[in-house]
Image 1 (tube, one colour):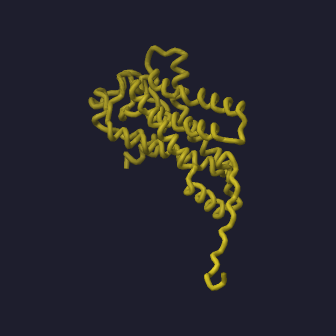
Image 2: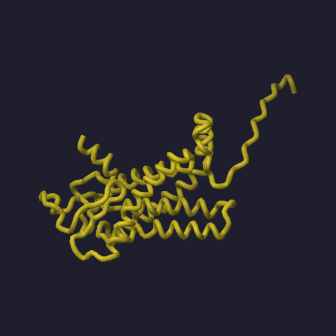
Image 3: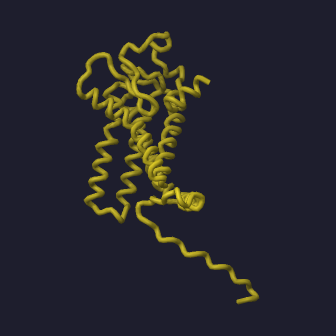
Length: 241
């Protein structure tokens, strides 16, 4: 159907709710503020006027979530690693959480955007903050990374991911409260994802995938290699003790 095609090409954020549509869209008119650019997780409004160098910077950061997702996918195809697989699944988790929350709140976006979908919370902010939180927790607790490299990695991640929320306000695609809500949800999701990755279920899943694909699947997660558990001792029957 047309709705499914829109979701596949533009992401879950393409689900249009009539309550969130701006007046110009309801009247069948084109966006008077600019053009909708980008695709999937990297959509943004390119304005008709008032373009400065900050507009280009904001467009770059608004497109970054898409670049991040595609980059993780390509890296995963190259390494066939557990780390990239889990990171790729997390991007879809962010999209699902974002879509559900937008359908619940059904809040319109601010004036000046060409987006027709709901704006609460900001999906870009949610995804970027979730990735930053997960990465920061992984690096901070990693014993195999020295303090200097920890600061370098976290600083680079901060420069790459944290300005995404600002970019959404700069291009009028989200309001401040929508960006803050998205960032808060991303912080919670990233933290929950980190603790989920520490569970026995994920450990067993990685072992299962390695046993299923011993020559193609790479166990490059967690950051600190864990000592293999000893084999369980067979139970000795009572009559043989």
